[in-house]
Image (cartoon, rainbow, N blue to C red; front, side, top):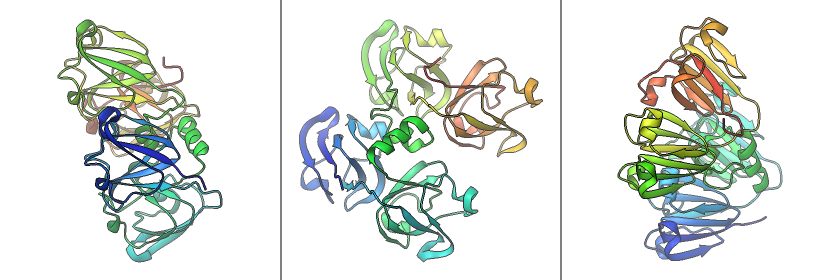
Amino acid sequence: MTMGKIIFYEDRNFQGRSYETSSDCSDMTSYLSRCQSCRVESGCVMVYERPNFMGNQYFMRRGEYADYMSMMGMRDCIRSCRMIPMHRGQFRMRIYERENFGGQMHELMEDCGNIQDRYRMSDCMSCQVMDGHWLLYEQPQYRGSMVYLRPGEYRSFRDLGVNSNRFMSMRRIMDIKWFSKDCEEGGKSTGCAVILSNTGMNMRGKIIFYEERNFQGRSYECMSDCSDMSSYLSRCQSCKVESGCFIVYDRPNFMGNQYFMKRGDYADNISMMGMRDCIRSCRMIPMHRGQFRMKIYERENFSGQMNELMDDCDNIQDRYRMSDCLSSQVLDGHWLLYEQPHFRGRMMYLRPGEYRSFRDQGMSTNKFMSMRRIIDPCS
């Protein structure tokens, strides 16, 4: 089995004292007073917000994490870490609907994107891992908080100290090359899109934000998601996209009105894009290589008329006689939705997942009339 190597640093951007390890560490405070950046030189590592492998968990593979707290939305420093050995044999896990191995039971030997769809299970609250190493996610399609499980019995996920104790999708941790390839080509996992977005996907984006118009004032360079620009700049009024594609938002935490940016210079993004305010957060869009599939619904909560898309649609009224699209399920690929026909008006970026109500995105509109796939190269 191959093991990993990770270097932790006290401060952001690989500054301050450092600590190198190729094994589990139950308490980082034995070596560093804090840890705010790290480099994974080989292998896969699970990091935890609390000592003794407790609290919220984050999956890291080979790459540089210059400021992982903002990159991954961590609330605190890394306090402990566990190396993930690469498993070569079969994978086998039993999942249970209730704690203490109660309720409905099913045995898994492969990934499961949604236990509700596959098994009609409402929850997974305990499990037995017989073979292999797994990641469990609190939401379908490998989204939300995750937990790492190695062979053993887990009578209650509460004992792991994570925010969630119910999980809806499960993924095997396979060979590192396979896991990287899956993230690059499939694009299905928000876990990949968010947790791994800063580590060498096949299309790695880079954007530079500036405080003033015409690329003046202080700047901040970003190659991943950023949930709050105010951590780096008091305002952002111009930017340069050097590679890849980004969605920028006029509110923190990926909320509010959204704007699609591809490679180019934006000397005055407020006037060029009709923004009412500065950029407050941004999300990098990974390039998807496979098929595209999305279900659109006429009403909120997946109700009313439903149609499935696999290509662009410039007018749902003309094609489907749908008056509105108020909710959707993105099964494959990354999409842009527009409030008006022919890809006009305000837009919204959707990645794989369920969207019961577009109101939750904090936008000024919640109805959309045309849909377009985000295809490589960004266009």
